[in-house]
Image (cartoon, rainbow, N blue to C red; front, side, top):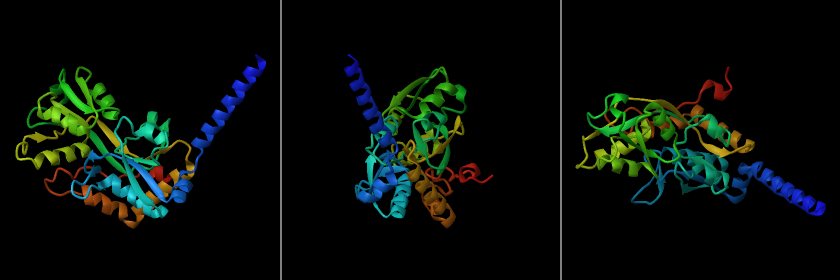
Length: 281
């Protein structure tokens, strides 16, 4: 019995050691060794991440940020599609090296993964049919669509406790429910909603029928996600973001997708690195 116990303890110690090694792995060294940076990105959330129907290549703000980081590391960038629900497990399981997937930095998530400096700041709002929502009161007791595994689920449940929250695998599905009248609104970060509104505006059947009312329920700072304790990799990514800001490359990318442009609904958001994140007192 004592021998069995000792074997169990030894096996557990070995597993713990292996697990600890995985946690302490140096992604930067691994990425350079294999010559490829594999990033988890959204594939249906313009202007952050989507697949160009003509070239079949990933495009968007998040995608361009990853390409800049890969270039700095001297490697190629590859992309894997993720959803709000599966992105953190994919990172923790080692299926991707980094997440660039419209992910809000929260204390709860920071217990499980590490985040880069904030590279985009937006706020949670609603996409609705024109004139249907002017305040949170108009949403009380109504069905609201959002994405599974997102902070939007939690935020809207707190902001409108009486609402029925319908969670979908992605935002296009939620928008379809809005078009079909199954929900009164779709809620997530304004910058994502602006991308969905942009797609609706290109369709003659829906043009001019939808809007993003000036009703905001939260502030959403985005960070690139990395495995917990991956110190060298986090530092490299943060240093790259700071270099991009100082050189003007980050502003160039921001302006490409979000700079004010008249009535263009795609242009919503802010590039944001706080003084505290920079270490400036």
